Image 1 (cartoon, rainbow, N blue to C red):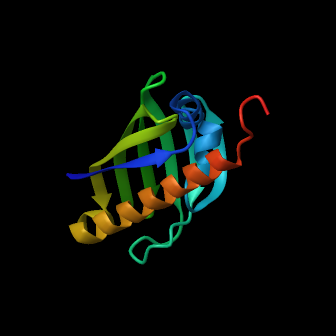
Image 2: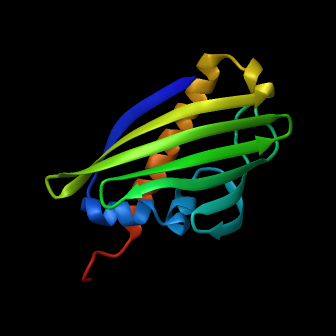
Length: 153
């Protein structure tokens, strides 16, 4: 339906990055627009979002479930959102590799399903909103990783 991909270079070693990215407590802190954490029970986190998009008002229930994890190389998550008159399923995957002592994260996000009112939203608007959420999520990951103490410190 809609496919996005990109890459991000992180300073931390890829084994450390992988451990953080599969930790739902860590990941939830990185998600933009979280208003409330309902539950985090491995492999699923349930949160309430208050997105700032004009075509989505109110709250969204987000269920984030880890689908795959192969240390220290890859992880995949299914994000399901439900709001008043709207639903969406997005499969996000990342592959990590060593890059000069840091981590190169290659990511993909595939919007698998849009339901309700979101079906009527133009594709370009959905793509722009998804790109913003991904950019904000990656910035959150980078910020949270940088705030972690150095190993052995």
